[in-house]
Image 1 (cartoon, rainbow, N blue to C red):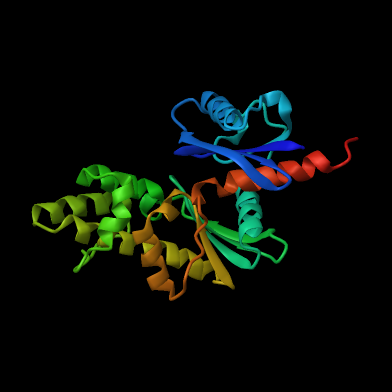
Image 2: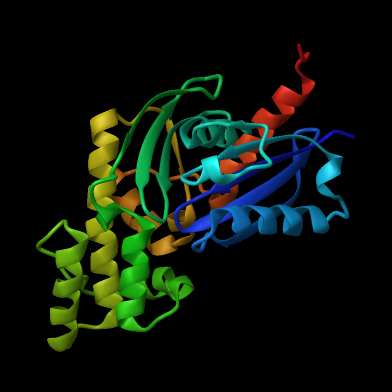
Length: 262
C-alpha cells in the first residue's frame, strides 16, 4: 500500500493528512506557533504515529499553506488554492464554489467539473472576514471558541455593527458590552458582519452551482448559518473542514507518487 502525506502550514493552525488509495488514514492538527519547521515535524510525527508508520514509509509529500516553504521534508509545494479545490472535489464532486474561512485570510474559489481552480479572491487586507476576528471576539467576551456558534444561535436581537473593519468592530463590541448587550446578541452581530464581508467576495466572483465551506471558520455553526441566510442557500460543510487543503495536498501527492519519474 502506497502512503502519501499532505501538510498544510496555515497562519494559525497546521494540518497533516496521511492517505492511501485516496482515503484518509490519519490526520493531525496543531497550532502553527512561532516555529513552522518544528510544527511541521510534529504534526507529521503525530499523524504517522496514529497508524504506526514512520517518515520512511511515505512515498511522496506535498506541502501547502502560508508556511509551506518551511517544510524541509516535502517533495513539492503547491498553492492552497489548488489543494482546497482538490480536497473539496474529492468530497463533493458537484461543488463549484468554495468559501474558505482561514485563521488569517478568507477566500472564495471557483472550481470546474474536474476539481481545478478557475478563479479566486481573498480578503488579505482585512481580518473582519476571517477566523482571526472570531478569536479576538472570543477572547474579548471570555468564552471558548467552540461556544461561539451555539451561543450566537440563541440571539433574539443581533447587535448591528456600523463598521466592516475588525479593529473598529472590536472597539464597537467593547462599547456594546458596556451598554449591556447580551453576549449572544454580540456574537450574532459579529457573524452577520462577517457574513456580509464573505458574501461580498462571493458576489464578486459569482456564485456558481453548489457551494462548500472550509477552514476553521466552517466549524462555527453560527457563522455558517449567517452566510447561508445572506446567500439564500445551504452550504456543504465537510466533517472536518479544517483539513481540506491538507487532504487535497495528499491527493496531489498520490498523483505524483504514481507518475513515472524521469
